[in-house]
Image (cartoon, rainbow, N blue to C red; front, top):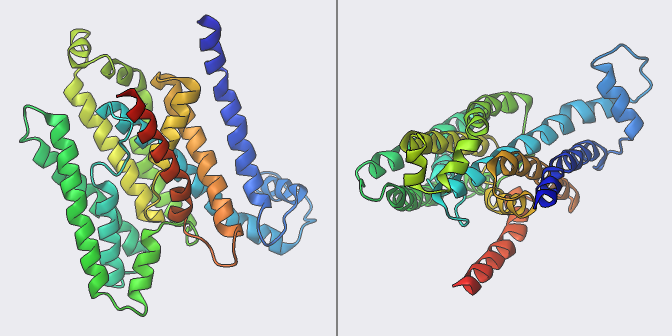
Length: 338
């Protein structure tokens, strides 16, 4: 048993190495060829003064095109995976994902409204973020009135609010100009990193960091929640406050991600399962493992997105190709246990 635990713990450095390999290799892949030597020299030139022996185009591609995109993929992949594993632990349900409280649907509706009103890229990000937060605020307000089964109230209210905002998005698409606005809304809702800029990273990284810090600090307390409500209270854990902190933090993360990348589904559902299978259910290990695997996964998927065809494939489509079969596997596996 001791050897088994040590084996699981040793996987975290391996995940870190995998992430670094994915991160560095993403700079070398693309239609404009960049060598490893050029990559190292260009990055070093930002820190120390070295002679310029690379083409100006290589520096532009590395720093202006690929760096924001790779950083965004790592940030969003790790954030959605962290939110997903916390939601699943909180609701004690492996089928739960960051979409459960309506954050994605609310953010999608906000983006659709902003695109319909032609508010521009910054306006889309801000209104989308507000939409995600507003959706979860409505869900929390409704669930407060379900005193006997607060968790069930949260889930049902999330389903209702998600359906309401999805209907609102459909209405906006129905009213939108089919020549320009409707394709823009449809493409944005499928998710992608093609238009990511440095300012977007700054805009999203602040709320994501604010959400991640409490989750990382409270990960050992989330282990206590898996023991049950009464057991957690007997050792002095304020379960109600802990649940709200986790919900608010996870929703803040999800809304921030959706506001700059569109709706990238399945990451928050699939990656937490992989991390638990590999390192176990202890949040002290599974949370950082999920973040490392999520970042690596979305970087790899983004590489396929920009290399499989001449026109970029939206990330939501590619993640669905991975997530839907895995979800079917989970249903069949859980069904055999019944």
